[in-house]
Amino acid sequence: MNSDYDYQIEIVFTGAQQTGKSYALNKIIDRKNSGQIGLYVPTIGVDFVIKRIQVTVQNNIYNIKLKLCDMAGQERFKIVINVNYRNASGIFLFCNVCDQDSFKKCSALIEEIRENNIQNANVMLVGNKIGTERAVSVDELFSFAQMNDIMFAELNTENGDTENSILERMVKCVIHRILLRK
Ligand SMILES: Nc1nc2c(ncn2[C@@H]2O[C@H](COP(=O)(O)OP(=O)(O)OP(=O)(O)O)[C@@H](O)[C@H]2O)c(=O)[nH]1
Ligand SMILES: [Mg+2]
Image (tube, rainbow, N blue to C red):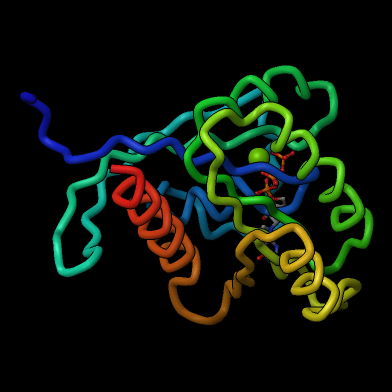
């Protein structure tokens, strides 16, 4: 093996429109202008970026090459989205906690993930705090995650680097699963 990484992992960001997927991803990759809350540029189809990280799992350090796939929330890109679930090892399912509709869409999205993903990906429901008026409670999100046997986290733009901590948590879970399979 002549690669400079131990594992290459594909992670998909999915969820309804305007749930903050691209905003979170831009923060993760330190993309310029990522701090402009309120500026909305809808994703067209899918946006791919590569990021390298190091994680420690069971006292071993792993160099990971991540392929991060930021999916459009718009329904018209459904086919592209479903194709991209295929090889994902980790999937972030975004919900805007101020928008009940984005939460309702999570049920259908979970179904689509189950139908199209062949890697049996680790899935994490991400409650993203857009605005201030909360319309979906933590209890609702937590119950949904439990019922569907997926992980759960909330992002907080004001409180530290929560985007990178959920990414690290996800990658560690994926590596753990890969190691168990060996
Ligand atoms: N207040 C607040 N606004 C946010 C937050 N995250 C994202 N936004 C804003 O919400 C809007 C939509 O964010 P995007 O990241 O483009 O949403 P998206 O999920 O990628 O949308 P699609 O690409 O259409 O699926 C933008 O105006 C962002 O600036 C947040 O945590 N708080
Ligand atoms: Mg987007």
